[in-house]
Figure 1 (cartoon, one colour):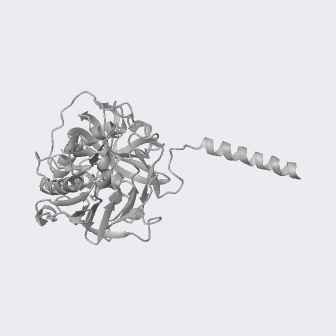
Figure 2: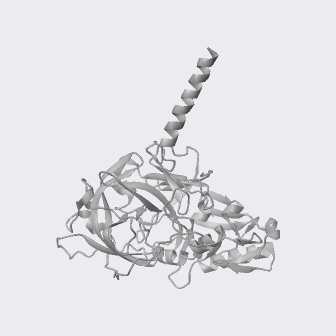
Figure 3: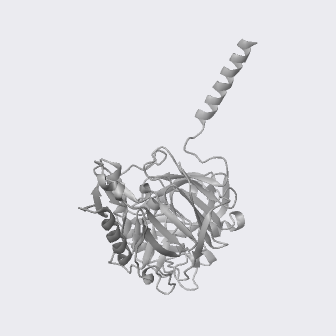
Length: 437
């Protein structure tokens, strides 16, 4: 009897090993509301980091693209005007962000698309694209693919539309994205997210790219406009999603994107979600103040106030790497931080407040005060360290002053290991601590 029992255990173990090794360790779970959120340079990502000798240098390289990102956010005014899209040869695509695995078409073609909460449209490079990488979507290989012409409502909802007024023909459009530009055709096909399939999903089929910041395998827009994932999925996700972003250091781990009300945290602190009709894609929240330790930083209210007319206020964004405050706000935070830590201070890339790591115990906790919610950041969300480990730096910066800088941007480094919940029906944002690995 004992021998039979041991043999049964061995057989069961072999079955288990055969089953688990046949599964894709990078695929999302079978739960149809969850997708893995993968750091752009994680093990499950197809993208290689730029040449750098340390994680810190990689992060500095990623953060160096933030000014172009913030400028892009500042130009999202819901315009429908045509933008130029010069043609150039392909360049290296390096964007500091998170990606999700999706399949487009029938049968599904796999893409690792960048997750972007501040963009509505989805777009992917298509076969024959000039300046694109080798990973392209093949329309002819999909039985559910279909082009869209200028007469359909979706064509009038895309930014950079180039259709003549009242005209017909293919729905072409040009867009800029974080310092680059592309031209595309609006098409539709099935979109598979884990086990969910959204039929007739409208997205841009890119035929030419100029610049190096357009995501190499496309982008999935989670904004609030009519062509976003929430809008096109209709009642399927009830206008609700959340994500948990793992640390950039989490090479072997992924976070999660939960779509719809199922599986969302039941107990979570919330703050009102604000809407700007001039920038309808962005997720505005009411940031009322910032504390460093026990000190509430003196900041004139007009630099934090939400104003739909000027576009000023604070947004939560998945595509900016380090939090950027308008210059008067950042200067006030930096000066108070320096006062509490004491110097001397030096700069490292985008970070202008670096100090000897021995003084890290003096670094105050950063707290962001939202309406109805206080978010206290642990040190890993507010400090980074040099590759040698000898320096620690305040992981925030001023918004670039060469644009209409009225936006404060809560970026993904400060969101890591937090569950961020967006409810576009009840107009609220929830934030809870969660280990995202």
